[in-house]
Image (cartoon, rainbow, N blue to C red):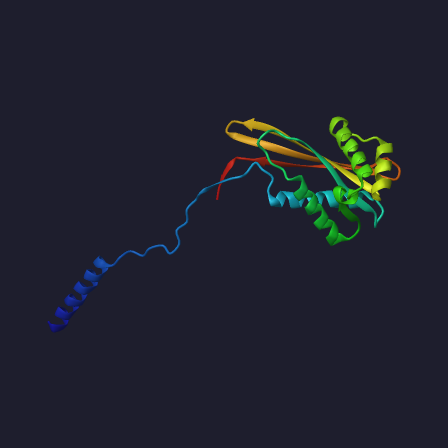
Length: 203
């Protein structure tokens, strides 16, 4: 009888404590928040464009090692509201070039320096490239002689916007041409495209 009473008391305590126990709480709370992809070019895009530019230039084998290549004018034809930092892209290209060491890159403005005659030629070529997407060979040769560079890079950036319901897609097209400042001839051309979207994605 005594054992039976102890058993009943113990059973009562178990029921009491189980009834008062707090259910276990999760240690980590996960929330799913939407992410908006920016329509602007971001730092990773600049790196990718610079890499594509340099790899394409090397694979073309159009320019001998050790030559001086100047990064020249960049013409922008973009829809209003989008931002692109041409100078930043040129700096990224310079960084890739310095790591590789195959060519010697410089900024055209640095090559010009205080040479007014070279600056005048450069401005003429920039205007011509903006209007006609080409450069007079004689102007290029004269500029190369005055600035002591071997090749000049011309860049052109454009955007194309497409709306699909609530989603907007912007395609950035960056085109390059390189002119030989000794012959006045175009020796290389290529382009790269990056499409950005404001489509909302969830984790």
